[in-house]
Length: 359
Image (cartoon, rainbow, N blue to C red; front, side):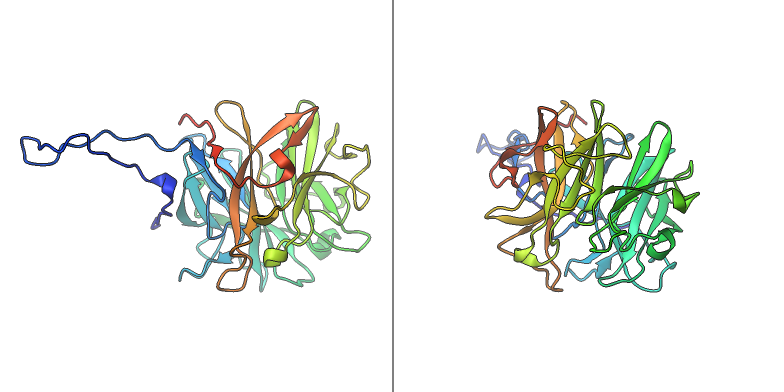
């Protein structure tokens, strides 16, 4: 698989000359290498990595990120789940795509919103198979022994009509007390719409009983991510329009529960199974709009938490294809009184200290 690199100001090492003399071979005397910059500025990857999922390979220490199938307008066509990697969460290079061929269990659609996680020593990739206006989208799963792939498809977990949840997209895997689950769901005004969870088989590749699904949030949420911390399950979800260029209204809200199946309550103690509930974590600002569909929280080697998500730069909201130009963003996430906090509740637009990564 051919690797191409994205060149950024932070991915170059600069040499300085401290002497204008010559070595004995007649070559200029090399100067010392300066260290890489200790700060970064958003976005950390472009032109696009929508609906990001990020995982750290325990063998190499490298981070791998995956995104929705998109045509970047660079002559490579629509990548079947683009794959990029980084040693520090800031400087990313393109690896390729997760699939060599599109899964065939649906006749048409795109491969959206991947969630990649290490399960039983292999990488499981959960994905949505859908297109705009699809009446029966579904969730599939693929595996690989390597984070860069290629991934072997294992087919569908379920279609929307099979599990009785309209617009079944945006999967998220979670393991809890030795049991494996997938959560999913997206917007709809139908009464049976919402964010749901269901138990998986021990290998994470099947749903033994579709009827055991349980609902955790109302149908105004999508892009669920659940984070376990200090006795709570924290629900992160996105609301608003994801993909309308500079008019996108995506934003992230949070709630928490003592039980995996809920109820998930916001800071006001209100259950997010009711529409309009949730505590704001992240919204747009004068530079970036539509922040949302966050990856799992990444904890750096100094114990600090980091939040990766996509957003749209207001100066260049669309790709040549007309799709929204959703770039990869990174911001520190802190905790106050048991709740996650992002500074000013908006994407950072100034220089920030880089994550502490030691290998």
